[in-house]
Structure formats: structure tokens, C-alpha cells
Amino acid sequence: MYVHKLPIGVLGASGYAGRELVALALRHPRLELAFAAAQSRAGERARVAGREITFAQADAVPLGDAAVVFSALPHGASAPYVAAARAAGAKVVDLSSDLRPGSEHAGHFRAPYGLTELAREDVRSADVVANPGCYPTATLLGLLPLLEADLVAPGATISVSAASGVTGAGNTPRGDLLFAEVAEDFRAYAAGNVHRHVAEMRSVVDRFGADADLVFTPHLLPVARGILATIVVPVREPIAAPLDLWRARYANEPFVEVSEEPPTLRDVVHRNVVRVTALPARHTRRPAVVVISAIDNLVKGAAGQAVQNANLLLGLDEALGLPA
Image (tube, rainbow, N blue to C red; front, side, top):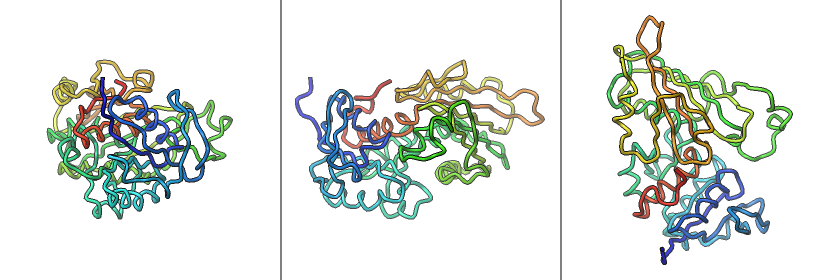
């Protein structure tokens, strides 16, 4: 039983990722919720994880009272609050795109890109962490074994087709996300490789020196949560048993499950895991590997990974308080 708890705060607590953060914090054995801020809903009450909370104004919360501040504010609005939290003495995990590779603020904060399984030691020694996006988490954890082994064919085009539940679009009311518009339908969006997550995926591919393009096409699934990504990677030479690469790379990772069978959303929802499989592509002129990965976009793709990173920032067991 833990006696001493570490205070944390959540900015943007009324959104889907923000509420997930609040729920994880309330259930965490070593964290205590100091404040949950939601500017447009300040003063309102909400029931989260069996507890009633009252949303505070983001501009009025005592940032310095928190050991870690999670910023789940909208993209473009988070960076000033990250600066304010750091000035108040708090460490920060930023869930927006403001500090990720390709952002104008990325260099200013010197925040490591917090794909935990890739940047664990950088995160452990940081003051600010740029939490990855949901699609990049599913995609990059699927790609890492091939990138690290330099097996991507020179001049290749890595093709990523990924589908997400509607919570990935946030909870701002939109006509195209009404039940009658989403139910019994399936559609691509941001087609043409223009989604804002391309920059951060591209930056990790480039970090390994891969001479490859990456084409990403997201789709909207008529479900609440979850991401399923199918990734086709041309490789230098045929790989008879590609899954062995994933087993070796992730053998000691608590939140990566390597599977013989293609993963499903039911395997991962409400869990802080990525479940992945890999198999050789048959009937192609050039060798390729098909990688299929699944995550919960609100847990491993957002709040869960943020808590995983916060555990490292605070010197705690990385897996503490996380649903596996």
C-alpha cells in the first residue's frame, strides 16, 4: 500500500483523451489528481472512474502544485501552457501535436518524441515529453523492427492504411460525425498523404536513414475507439519468418503483444498495448512484409502512453497503474 502520492494535473480534461487521463490518474496507486481543467466547461461537474470531479479554468489552476502536468489541449493551443507549467516547476507530457517533429515549437522545448519503446531513456531524463499521435504509435511500433535492422528496400514506398474509431476526431460537435452519418459507413479522409501525422512518422523513418517514402491513408471506422493499421513494406530480400524479428525486438516490452494471428480491436480496447503480427507478402514481384497492428487510440495511442511516459519522468515503474 502506497502512502505518498504524487500530484498531477490535466489540462483539456473534458475531451476524450483528457477524461481517459483523469480516469487513469484516479486509479493509479501513486498519482493523485490535483486539478482537471477544461476552459469551456469550467465549473461543470463530471463523473469519471466512479468519482465526481469539477472542471477548473485552465488559466487559474496552480500548475506548480503538480509534479507532472498532462496537456490534452487542442493542437495549436498547448505550447503556451507547456511553457507556463515548466516555468512553474512542473514536468509536462504534451498530448497535442505542438511539440512533435515538424511543429514550429518542437525545437524550443527540446522535448523527446515519447514513443516509449523507442525513446525510453530520453524520456526518463526529460522535463517535457512530446507524446506521439495515435496513428503514428500504431504505425511506428509496427515498423520499428524493420527500420532498426535496415531491412527496408532502398527507394521503397511504405504504404500505411489505418482505420480509427470516431473518438480519434475529438468531441467537438461535427455534422459529419453524427451517428446517422458514421453508422453503416466506412470512408477515407485526409487522402493524398496530407494528414498532420505524416510529419512525425516521416521523421522517425528518416532517423534510421531509410531511403523510403511513406504514404499514409487514414479511414474512419463506425466504432467508438480503436485503430487497426495495415502496413506494406518492401524489403531488401525475402524474409521467410518475419515475425521472429518482432518477437526478438519486443521480447521484454510489457505493452507490446506479438501475435501469430492478425490482431483485432477487441484484443486491445481499454488496454495500454499494441498487438502486432507480420507475414511475408505472397504473389508479389519484389519481396515485401505485411504488418498489422492494433491499439486503443485513447489508451496506448494517447492517455495510456502519456502515463507510461509520466511514470518514467517520475522514476516509477513504467507499467504502474496501466491496464495491460
